[in-house]
Structure formats: structure tokens, C-alpha cells
Image 1 (cartoon, rainbow, N blue to C red):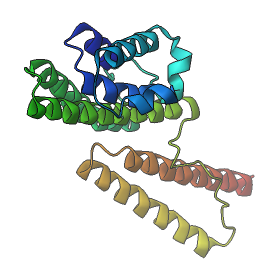
Image 2: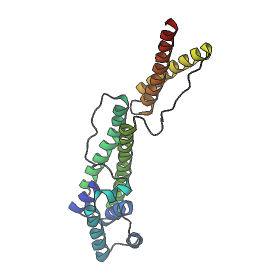
Image 3: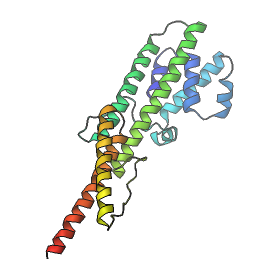
Image 4: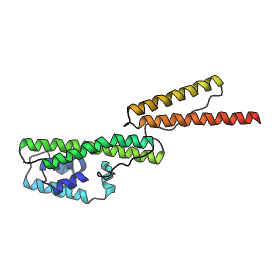
Amino acid sequence: MELIKKWMEGKRNFYVGAALYKQFGSDTSLLKLLSGKPTPHLQSMLEGALAALLEQPKIVLQDKQVTKPEAEEMPQSNDAVLEAMRKEWQPLYQRMNYLRHQLDKQEGNGPEATETRKDLAFEILSLEQECMRVWERRDYYQKHGSLPEVQQREVPVPTDPLELGRMVETLKRNIRRNKAQAQKHPDNPTYPALARQYQEQLEKITDQLKSNEGIKKQ
């Protein structure tokens, strides 16, 4: 909840704080009040509500998909899928930090300055959610060995030699195509994940063919 922490430590602009509470808060009565004009009493209520959010255990905040520290760097990896995720995450993270810096630089409380703060706050929140989604996919991949959209599936090996030959060629084409797409789109982890899946299927068929040849020789 780095954004809320920064808000509490900064000038505590009402509209920015309201945008933060609408994203992370759940008190329906306060949410309705925040749609109105700011008053000293409402400002005090908002500050108390956001301060309470900071004190909540992390497990409560996970319902809002805040599962990783916003300042945590995604490490480099030799795994092609993980590295593609890092390249997907990095520009989002850099843009988010840039906008945070711009938000901190905003001066004044006029209508134009307030609207600028609101726009910056909403874009920061959107980027933060995108970063979290990349982290969640990364966690899923590390736990399951595949992406949610690229599920492992068993492919029956044909017994007919012609069908088997066609399958081998199809797998080789799929490997080449996805490796080429991975080079064109290095920030898309789906392509290296698919290339790996097809490679594993090809290796399985190759191993089975070698095994069958060994049985025949015996």
C-alpha cells in the first residue's frame, strides 16, 4: 500500500485520497460521502479510514489483489518465460514510479491542480494493478510450471507412421513459430511457454520412438 503511505506522508489532497479509498476501501457509507464536496470533517474521516487500511494485516488487503510490495524489483532469470514476464512488468513499474514522482511535485489546490492529481492517482492505481497481475501470473507459473492460459495437456501419440510423421512436423513448426514470435515480442510470456510445451511434446514422442526401436532390436 505504498500509495496510501505516500499520501499520508504528503499533503493529503482530498480528491487523491478519495480515489485511493474508492480503490482499496470497503465502507459503503464513507464511499457515498466521498462523492460529495470535501469538508474538514470528511477530510478527517478519510484520513482515519486510510490510516486504518495501512494497519490492516496483509491477508485482508490480498482481497484487493495487493499481494506484492510495490517497491519489489522483479529479478532477472534464465527461464525464458520468467524473463518475458519481467520485460512485461518493467515498463509498467517504471511508468508507475515516474507518475508517483510527478504526483509528489504537484503544487496548489486549485481546480486544475486537483484534476491533475486525480488523473495521476487513477493512472498510478491502474498501473499498480497491472503490476500485481504480472506478479500473480509469475507466482502461478513458479507453482504449476505453466501459465494459466497455457495449460499442460496430454497429446496421444499416433500409431500410424504417416500420422506420427505429420505430428512431428507440426510440433517442429509450432516450436519455430513461437520462438520467432518470442523474439518479436520479448515481453509476452505466452510464446516461450508455448514453445516449451511443444518442445516437451516432441521430446516425449522422440523418446517413445527410441524406446520402440530398442524393443524391436531385442
